[in-house]
Image 1 (cartoon, rainbow, N blue to C red):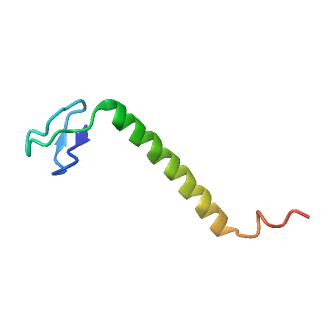
Image 2 (image 1 turned 30 degrees about the horizontal axis):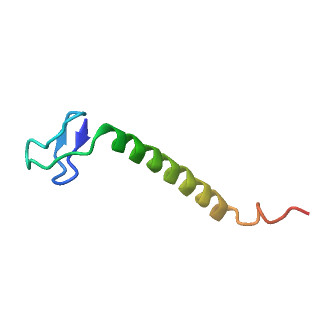
Length: 62
């Protein structure tokens, strides 16, 4: 299930137009690209949190 990018109402995957507001929904190629970018951002965020938890871990390489 997906959500309308305009009004936020839930709709089945593959819907081209929202049945509540009529707004056109993004196509599957764009959705796949956005999901991939979201995963990359999430992984980067986890990496940054790990570095903040132990900031000296990366710096002490003598």
